[in-house]
Image 1 (cartoon, one colour):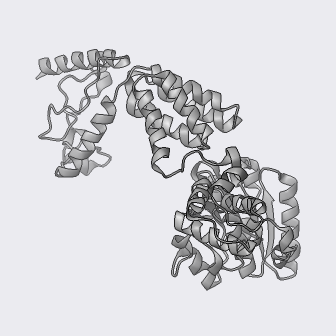
Image 2 (cartoon, helix red, strand yellow):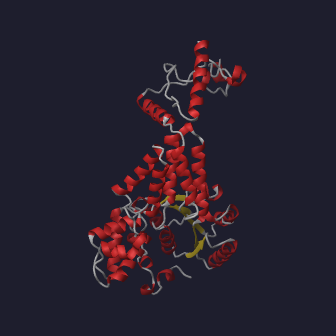
Image 3 (tube, rainbow, N blue to C red):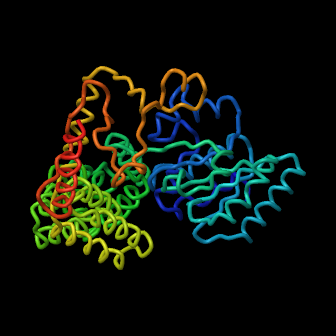
Length: 431
């Protein structure tokens, strides 16, 4: 299929989101940090540079659109592959098509949607053809490419980070979509609800607008009509609004307050309100570090495992693992000692002078450094009684005896406190 034919399907038969897919860079809403004057992708387009890249960003922000526009701008053959549905066979077919196009003097853009779902061997299959210039590789992913894309492929493709559309940009889409549908722009309240429901996703907003318009019969879309159209899909509170953050706050404070029932209630409320479970799992990981800490180090591991389980199972099966993590965090002993200590150290360093590393703690890889005394008199802890060099100084000069971390008398930190007290007694004896 030629690039031009991607835009030539019968418009009335296409979903609104497809009909409004930009055909030029100037029609793109959002991504000004990449497409504004003098910005990276705009400069590449203007200079005629076709380069391999990874487009990393949340759903519905224009990753596929940018890949198509790049192919169209350079009159290149556009070959899309879905890593969810495709495999090695599709890669081979794409290579064959690219070779045929090359023989005809035409370039190819190979677009791989959700590239992070391809395994290492499948990703490696692109490498020789990217290096030879057979095609320009453009991968799209919602996951961090540093972890999900092979380093070899990553080194050959520039990563471009796309952002969710903000409220102003989504409002432009509401107006553009309404004009395309031939209807009045929704009421201010309905538009706000649509924008909150979209959560930065252009496709989600346009699909919802089209559904509401089909029931409006020419009438202006208001909140009541939107509620009837989307039903349970519509957020029960606006993301970005006060109630959204109030519910998150209630979950966090229920965990901190050791109320498993309260924590479960607010967790279920968030899911019922349409919050992405991945967002909740990130908040739970934060709670495990901030509010439980070393009082129960297992809390962080359990929460990470729950997040991983959700990634594997999705909704609704994976939600139970997150619920187990919620309850565990709520009943675990609480400590913010590390959280407080870390913040205190950061604040101290920010206002303090730059203190030199004591000479006995410095590395001495060269003769000159050894002659200067680097590493001299350092005491190797493993050679000391009980593997502890009592009295050794590890802070810069002038900070001897400074303490930031103070364990709380709960959970494992009870034992940590006893250990630190004994070590400090040995220090006092040594000095």
